[in-house]
Amino acid sequence: MRRRRLEWSAVSETASYPDATVKAYDAIAFRYAEMVRGWLDGVPLDRAVLSAFAEVVRAAGAGPVAEVGCGPGHVTAHLRDLGLAAFGVDLSPVMIGIARDAYPDLRFEIGSMAALDLADGELGGIVSWYSVIHTPPRELPAYFREFRRALTPGGHLLLAFFEADGGPLAVFDHKVAPAYRWPIDDLAEVARDAGFTEFGRMLRAPGADERFRRGHLLLRLP
Figure 1 (cartoon, rainbow, N blue to C red):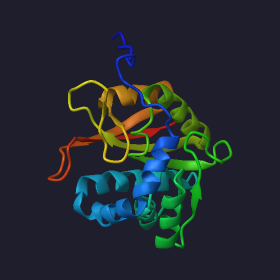
Figure 2 (figure 1 turned 90 degrees about the vertical axis):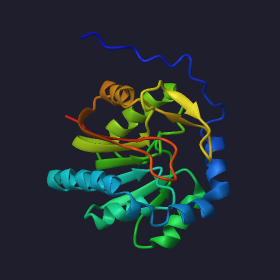
Figure 3 (figure 1 turned 120 degrees about the vertical axis):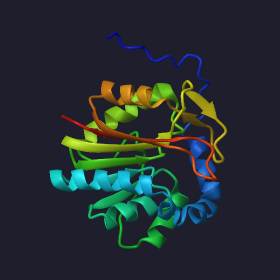
Figure 4 (figure 1 turned 60 degrees about the vertical axis):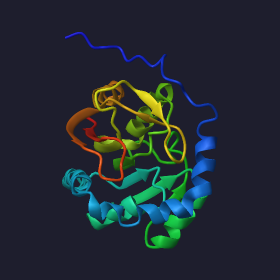
């Protein structure tokens, strides 16, 4: 079957990314941290995806796990509780400060997921939990290539994102900064082009206080 070429030309891309996004998250960091506190308790399907990811990473025994774009650190802490040697990376200094205060036993670093301060093949897993949603589509392949570089052969990647629910790739008015809703097949194709193989996916309907369907992709390197 002939593969469909992804069409990004019609998608408006925000200027001054990522500086504008970092400033926006710095400005609302404390309110955001309070908003997501305990959020995982009410989303059993999301917890199931994180548990499945943790299980395959533990079975591979291939190294630590980085949560890229970790925000206030609640998902990183959950990954630790699932038995992973997890640490967090985020460009927002304020978010990293909140994460360090909340989880002083965990490692959190200021850094870009587009240029991780890690050796080639250092990681056994990467979690991108709604952290690439603000990335302009034309820039996203470079992020996946950086994830591939930092992962060991056989390493695993988990993506969580806002799904397009039958519509095309489109920008929307996220509460913090402009973000993108991806058709799950299109995002899987971007990851595949970067060398990843999909081994699982989960879509769920939006909750009572959510606007959009949520997508999750479980990926690994050969």
